[in-house]
Length: 245
Image 1 (cartoon, rainbow, N blue to C red):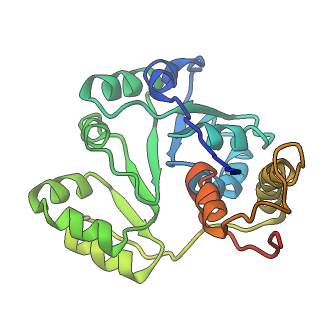
Image 2: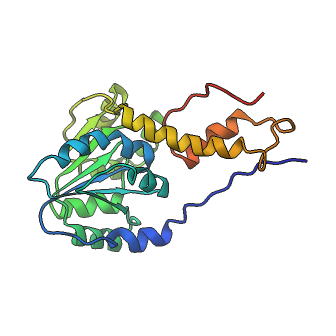
C-alpha cells in the first residue's frame, strides 16, 4: 500500500525566545510591522517598499511567527528592513523585546491580538495600529465570551483599519476606540505573484518526481494539497487549475 505523508514542524519555540534580538538595533526611529505569517507579510510589502524610500525612516522591523514568512521575506531586496521572530507572549519576554527594539510605532496586521504585548506597548505609550483588520464571526463570538478582557485589549489600539464591513461592525462592538474603514489592502502586483509562484513550483516538482511518487498508482486527494498550502505554506488564497489524472 502506498502512502503520502506530509509532515513538518517549524520548531520556533527556541527561535522565538532567543532570536528576537539576534540583530543589532541601530540608532534612530524604527517602524515595526507584525504579521502572523506569509499572507499578512506579503500584503504590506508594497507599503514597506515605499517607506524604504523615505529618508526620515532609518529602519523597519518586521516580525512574524513562522519560518516560511521569514524565507519569503528574504526574497525581496529590502535595504532598511530586518526580520525577527515575534516573542512568546509572556509579560517578561514582551518587555525585553520592547526594551531592546524601542519601536516608534507598532503596526499589527489583520488579527494579531497578543494580550501581554498589547498591554506593554500601551504602558510605554507606543502608537499602535491594527492594519487591514480582519475579525471573523467565529472569532468575534469567542471574544464576546470574555467581554471585559476584549474591551481592555481592543482599546489599546490607537486606530483600527478594517478590511471589510463585518470587521468594522465587530470592532465597534468589541470596544475599539477609533475605527477608519479602508477596505482590503492586499496588493497583488507582479512581484508578489512571482514569489508565490516560485514557492508553489518547489512543491509541484517534488510531488511530480517519480522517485517519490508513482502517479499511476496513487490518486492524490485535492483536500490534502489544499491543506498543505493553507496550513504549511500559509497561503490565504489558492486555486487548482490542473490535477493528476
